[in-house]
Amino acid sequence: GQNIDQPTEMTATEGAIVQINCTYQTSGFNGLFWYQQHAGEAPTFLSYNVLDGLEEKGRFSSFLSRSKGYSYLLLKELQMKDSASYLCAISGGSYIPTFGRGTSLIVHP
Amino acid sequence: NAGVTQTPKFQVLKTGQSMTLQCAQDMNHEYMSWYRQDPGMGLRLIHYSVGAGITDQGEVPNGYNVSRSTTEDFPLRLLSAAPSQTSVYFCASSYSAGREQFFGPGTRLTVL
Image 1 (tube, rainbow over the protein chains, first blue to last red):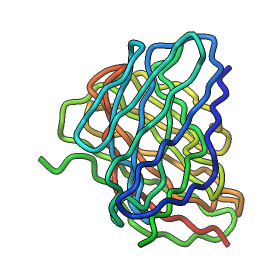
Image 2: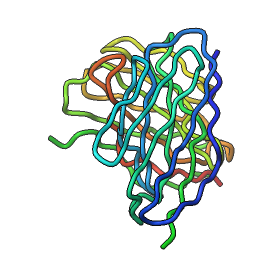
Image 3: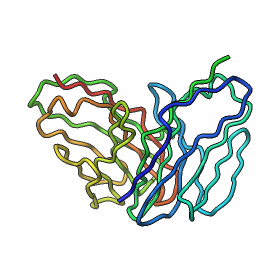
Image 4: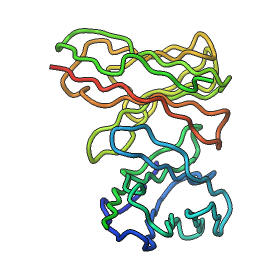
């Protein structure tokens, strides 16, 4: 089976940096996804980590440590539009990713 | 490309009624899946398919049926709706395992 843990909610200030953590336990691991979901909308893909280390995409970066079962999503220069839920998902033994419960990020001025 | 489309956007059913949620994609993706999303529960996998003619159960399959007769379409059938099936339903597709999933806009279902 799989177990994925993320904080339920985080708040941050516009212009700041925020780190959203995801820890997991799984019997099989192929990679870890991060998705963004604005209220009332569908999730959209942010990143996919297969190997250990940091991958950077503009203001967003994602880190993976397979030995520790740990990932984080780093958001820099926060903007109001970054207020959304951030979903961590594991691609494990089955073909389809399993999602965590998501972290609701609130960015305030 | 339209991407992943879902119909209807909203639906209200009475307990015991049946209905089909439609999902189609025009990206020639082999992998398709259905999730439901409830407050505080994240996305939970109902059923998935890795190609035409192949389907399998996810985490919460009870009360739902699927079929995949073509690559493009993956309908989800509610056999006898129950209030516990009130949720937002998302269909998603991907080119293969380990590739990003593209999600449809969702169907918001209420069962009275």
